[in-house]
Length: 258
Image 1 (cartoon, rainbow, N blue to C red):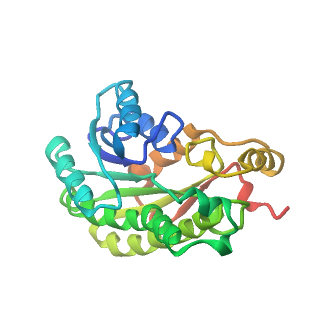
Image 2 (cartoon, one colour):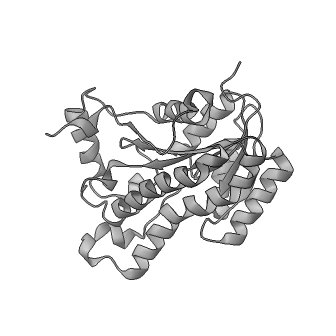
């Protein structure tokens, strides 16, 4: 039997074919899940529609700006109407204004901080709260978010995004505590660096990739498919006793002191 056969999931954060959220969508679809993919704006919507057409079963598509509560409410209504409910949620959205990544962290503006925390961290809370009633009605569910080691350590030019990811990981733990009695698990995957649209906004990203290749125990970078495989574990029944965790998928880089 397929790992996610009979499951219905919402995946937020697909931007293009390099998105980790897209790798997870492909893996989930291959394992029998019915999907709803979101997009923000027509420019990204075009990409998502093209990608969606390549999946074995066409997913439902919905526009959603995670900073707008009405969009999140409409997203859940669409999932209920088109899929019959939600068994899992993948939260793969993050954003900080470019100037907040280019300038020293100490110069982060109040507005850039607000935007980064709203999009990258609070959106998980808002989405989890919105889908929880549907998950509970279906006997429980799983929420998986995407984070990075910059939440714990300083990486050049990651700046306010590192602070946002720290808030995201704390939110995962608090949400796991709140939603556990409703049989809803909440976890995060801390992926090693992958060339995504978000990574393109970080100056010196190629140097970070090389450092991982040189120092990670496996002496290589990770692939998006490896993040997707970890997500399948957390989304499916194999991970049924795992919640509140940040699973490291980084070729072991995080264990190294030098």
